[in-house]
Amino acid sequence: MRLEGKTALITGSDQGIGQGIAIRFAQEGANVVVNYRRNEKGAEETKTRIEQLGRHAAIVQADVSQVAETRRLLRDGIKALGPVDILVNNAGMEINADFVDVTEEDYRRVIDTNMTSAFFLTQEFARHRREEKRPGRVINISSVHEELPFPHFTAYVMSKAGMKLMMRNLAIELAPLGITVNNIAPGAIETPINRKLFENKELLDALMENIPLKRIGKPEDVAGIAVFLASSDADYVTGASIFVDGGLLWNYSEQ
View 1 (cartoon, helix red, strand yellow):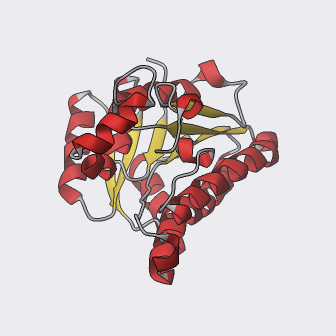
View 2: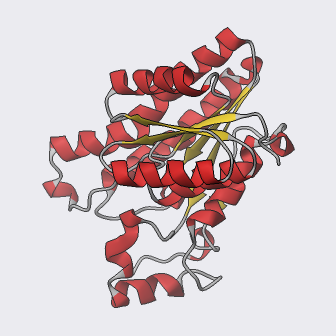
């Protein structure tokens, strides 16, 4: 087991990609701090599945769009399970709106959930690892849209592009602390955030035309890369974006 003896904190691990990573980490030997904002039932499900694998889990409710909440999240996670070795900034959201109609409230919700949370939680994590005098891993769940335009989702692509440069900058700045920082950039994955897309046959068919592997990804596809980046196999990997998209990015054309 590649993560034996490690503890991970995964934001938004009550469903979707975050839940998939949490369960896979437990399969690899890690204990997990499970975070949710509203979906307590999903967080309890994640915790139960982790414990069924013989690992420890603790649930910490926190709205990571609020900076004070991100700091409390890490503190409470450490209090419950001890030092945290791996941080996965997974929580995210998107709002579909024409640019001319985007409200300030919606803009701030997307930016604060997707990017501000990752900035300040990573800061708190880096301070924690510095105090522990131990290395660490930061894994951001970004998106193909850190590179790819996505009309009607401008705040979302801004947040993911910002996450890309934040990751590259912190990979350099945090290297002296032994902390690696990398992004996983998923394409179309079966998660609640994409439910409306998958229920629209016309949109789904158009999307499938742009995916060379001709299938929608699963949270497990992302989780496998997360395990690699969290493990000693990736000791010399930092400042990288790994795309998990079935080839979508390099074959995409806007319809």
